[in-house]
Image (tube, rainbow, N blue to C red):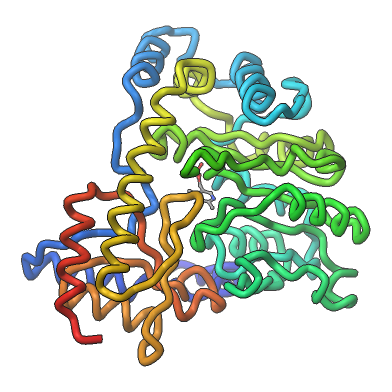
Length: 388
Ligand SMILES: *Cc1c(COP(=O)(O)O)cnc(C)c1O
């Protein structure tokens, strides 16, 4: 090869889903009928009215040019109106909303605007895998915040050492949480705001699952709490709410200065979101929201089928209040990777090993509710026959 990979690539943590992906490929080659509960991607199509809005916009030559870096004013206004209606949060669409090429893009780019080499970024473990590379690419050092069952999968911020806190620049949080399915109440967010202000730490709340909640227990925005806008941003996305993962559209909302930094990075690296997709996004946010309730009803039914089915075979897991994930402890004689591999090879049920979400994810597997209920019932039947 012409050159070695950069140091920053060699600093990335090992990719721990490789083993399970290989095992999956082998199983498919053998012709096994897999039930894939490993996928964090909605199986349902984007609602028709949103697709049609995108289609119309696609035909309009106005949209065939470079979009603005910060996003169409109409999209940012739609985001502001949605936040007002949904969370009673006031946002200035001009300065407090930024269009993203999906939440992942915003997460990846924000540290580049604020983290200097050697600065610490506080990241939950287990957590969405992108927080760590985003930190490393900026020259920062991830400091893991264990999310433990005994703390309801909330980080114990008060136990972080003073020396770490002095060097900490950013804090990532994510509730409703991937992969644990945990939720956080407003008093936790208030505590985060107070803590972050005390230590001059920027908060990035990653909130793509706020609409995927059950039993009518609607989940909050971080920006609802007083002072949040002074110290942080919330990154949101249309991916999970409107089955739009393939379209790539999200938004960052909150503190003007943080958004200014993020925009500075973005305007040097990307050229915004295709306007036809932003038009589809406007239709999603301002159109009828019945599709969102139907989505919740669908996942709730699947959640109940899977949790109650597993309960009948002796696996007792609480029903998550939000997200489409179940976070399940593995039998004590297995590691998460070995157990995931065992389920795959023995009965063709694909799950995600918890360790892939960071070292504190060890001891768990994640199941996603992104397959229909008949297949979930079959997964339970297959697991029932196993000797663990
Ligand atoms: C799915 C997901 C994202 C990414 O969303 P996109 O908008 O599709 O990039 C970000 N964070 C978490 C925790 C997720 O699960």
